[in-house]
Length: 170
Ligand SMILES: [Zn+2]
Image (cartoon, rainbow, N blue to C red; front, side, top):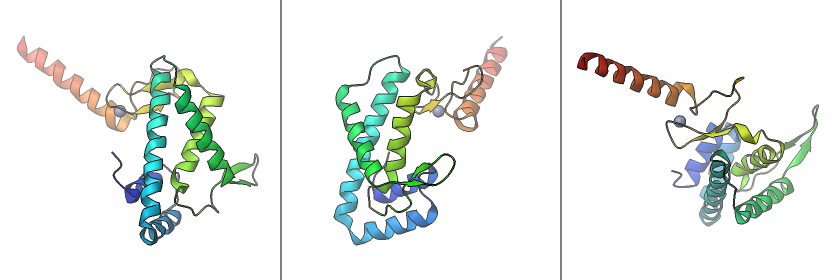
């Protein structure tokens, strides 16, 4: 999926973890330090694999491996070590002053730990149409797709086509 540091940064913007100026700064930094960018990218991919494994097993009613949880704990410790408490009501963790190459995934790790510790764990689901995981925030917990615009729509189209096919077969 992710093939290099530039894609990681692009994904960070897409996911709302990075602003565009932050992304531009990280791109510049990665060009100045290609070795560091490669290391940061590998680390990010490992973390992503751990997160995927942890939440996929929870979505399937299983238990995450202790080793994956321990690595996530280390990631959270590292993330908070680079964050600052920003004034708000309530205060929030901010990575605005963090210009290191590991910056993109830090808010993601922190949000993942937040979800693990605060829940709702029973709303973590695997999409019925693709390999995505999502948190079902619908009132009656009826959501089955990662996003209705993409997977939900293609599922509706599939059903529509199937219904037409069975009608014309009659
Ligand atoms: Zn999906």
